[in-house]
Image (cartoon, rainbow, N blue to C red; front, side, top):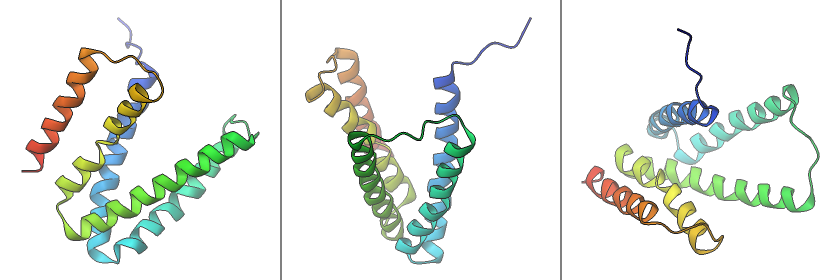
Length: 141
């Protein structure tokens, strides 16, 4: 009996879950030790070169279209705003509440997908969003 194959989405999603969980805990600790805005900037100063290094050693295309570059830049803008907001939230609130609310970004993306981008609206998706909101309310109590 061989080792079962793992779906790449599950594999990389699991890595994302664990590393972002660690990032939140370490970011909170950093925000308690230094100014949260400085902690956020240091986080991105480390993450940026890591991402650039990865594209250089991988087979990633370095071709950038105007539309793709603009969209990626605007996505980075929102990422930066969210990052800074999270670090500042840590300095004034509970790690549990800040990280749980921040992790609800998928609800925003799902709603945009269904309302604006034409993704199918199903009872299952609607129920998932409702349960996620209930979960956030329960965790933040």
